[in-house]
Length: 284
Image (cartoon, rainbow, N blue to C red; front, side, top):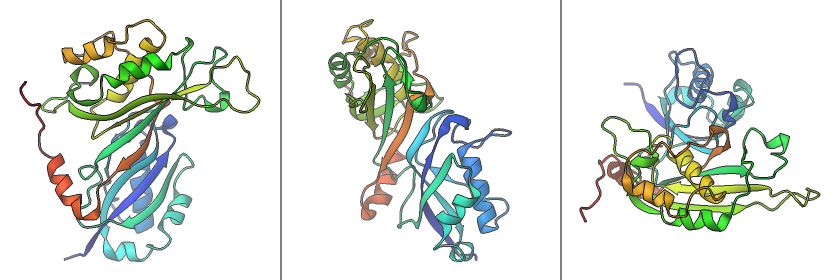
């Protein structure tokens, strides 16, 4: 039998010109581009298939994406010391595999993860977003009150059914544990117009996210921050457990996957087993 090895890949990409992570026919995707480069480098046909920690939608960026891939040991040993450098020559400039390493026993990029941390960046300067940041910062033309936004966000932290903020998938649960949801304002750059309000960043961390959850949460908080909704409104939407048409999903380009957190090597397999269980909330 052919000896196989599981590799962990740490990945970053500018999602602007990708149709999301997942490979799709006739579409340029992050998964497709990386798998094709791996196939060329390792001389594998068909190319190996990546398992990713968190699929991102079209236009979403990543600094801390993680994936794993299983390849023949013989193919890997021919390039193991130079794999990231060689991949850099094969990949387009909007995606990079920053690190490749043999994964520890029990590692699964998706199921072993403890949490995913995203950042969503919004510019509320009345003059608009710096042109150099237009691909990763959303312009919101109304001033944002971070006190109101953080008060509303705090009411959403914890384990809940986030059906009101998720695109429903048949047979999938929308119960998630939101670990962190907070807003902070970046300091304006030196020489910036003193009238400018600059960039506000939402940090959103959970054990997992359902489809469109982060962008829906951000959309709900923006209308609280600019005063169009009460501070209690997002929590009221959450408690209804029904997708609310009043919640606008924020555009993709302001969102970036920043970090995937994993347990110690000795707990990777146990964590993967726990994650595969279908979750339910306790009955009050």
